[in-house]
Amino acid sequence: MSENMRIIFDNVHDSAALTATTNALPIANTQRTGRSYIWRSTSSTDQVITATLSSPKFLGALVLGQHNISTTGRVRIELLLSGGVVFDSEFRLPSEVKPLGEWIVGVDPWGVSNLTLLPTRQFVVWMDEEILCDSYRITINDPSNPDGYLQLGRIFAGQYYSPDKNPTYGLTLEWQDFGENVRTESGSLRTIGEGFARALNFDLDFLNKNGMADLTLNLVRAGKGKEVYINIYPEQGGVKEAAHAFVAKRSSNFSTTANFFNNWATQLTFEEA
Image 1 (tube, rainbow, N blue to C red):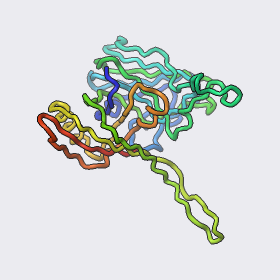
Image 2 (image 1 turned 120 degrees about the vertical axis):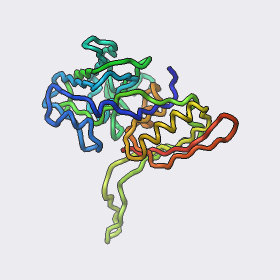
Image 3 (image 1 turned 90 degrees about the horizontal axis):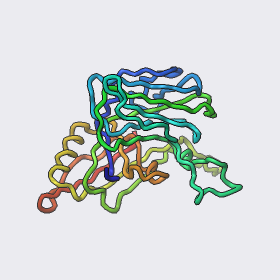
Image 4 (image 1 turned 60 degrees about the horizontal axis):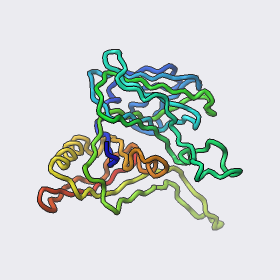
């Protein structure tokens, strides 16, 4: 499985029947567009989320967005078919602890994670191959969570598109800052508003016939209004991957250029949803 850019266009989680151990805020919020819609448990005791699909589907990845799982918390993903487990991620740490080469004795707390400093946090499990299942189960173990509850935003599950060749050099990641600096009558500088959204602009200059066809079908079907999950540096870890991976919508028009024999190129821009 290559580590080229991956995009989940068709999120099967949105049509699944969901249950959760507890619901301070409903688990159905993980199927809704908008950052303000979240699932929240009533406590930090073990939580199990189950999703039952209307029919068996092939899954290649599962993403938990906007989570608050601590650096000591653990997550387990299981895919099931006719009641039997066909994939088990076993328990994994969703937050990468700062490695010893970067961790500074006496300065950094033990077990600190740089990823907690980002505006949103995510956890993704990639399958080595696409697996047929009719349900999946997410188990979260984080009894020492300082918030006293567990929380998830958008959940994505499905197959993903990945080009044979990665974006060419020149990829741009922009952090759009919603804060606006305004001068008061006394001359002081005040900031109005807050928050961030990311925008990715990149070129795919080496699309063969099949790659161009697959990308065209996915982008045209999704349009600009459908949320997708994009990850430019899958499985590479750290801030590099986390900063370049998020739920997004395409903001650019889609066009392809046949730039030489049996090859097409396109430029795309995705904005964080």
